[in-house]
Amino acid sequence: MDDFSTLISALEKNISSSTDKKLSYLRSDLHKAIDNLYTQVESVMWLNKRLSLKAQLPPLRGWPVSPDFLLKLHTWIRKNKPKIIVETGSGSSTLVIADALRQNGFGKLYSFEHLEKYANQTYETLADEHLTPWVELRVGSLEVWEGPHLNPTGADPISKWYPLNLAGIEGVDLLLVDGPPGNTCQYARYPAVPAFIDRLSPNAQVWMDDANRQDEKDVCEHWAENYGFNLEFFPLEKGLGLLTRK
Image 1 (cartoon, rainbow, N blue to C red):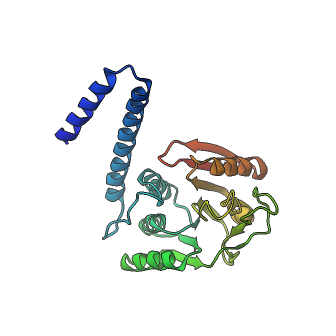
Image 2: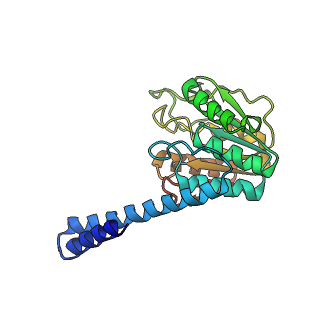
Image 3: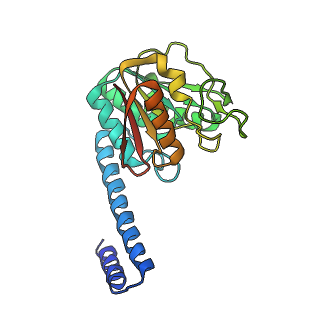
């Protein structure tokens, strides 16, 4: 850690002594990167203290949900004790949600996944952690979506979403939107609220991961305007759009 601090100090001195605007930008980016790294490491440490898992979580870099998001998610579930949760896109968030429900002693997660490979990986980890009673995985290839969408009619690629296998899902207290992938179509995550709007509980919240991206911001703003939500964005690593009932 001392060597790392020394290196950072040396870089800052070199950058500070330069009048080159590009180096000034580099200095700013360096500070942001260090601050974010610290936040994510700190979040992982606190998250591990709160989880009751025997093994470690899957890698949390790249595409998976970031540690700061997972920490906020686990904390919210433990505090607010939702009965029914739905997520689109399975993975590390599935394990964190299931762990929080188990600690609460009640609740159910319905997790929608379109790729059998990832669903099997998630189920195997859930089984290893004895978390399967808390989760129902609903797996199926993406299908053509014919409901409301921001993706223009006739767009290429066409609008797709998870199979509408919603039987038995009522009174959803938390809808976590982290799929399908952005390259599925433009505004790929839009169908989540139209699909579940009549199945949300009166005090339900909708969480959008990756809300730093413009597509996800646009989707959140459209949901808020058209479905009667208050909207707040949180500056997590990848962004969180949080919608609550008015």
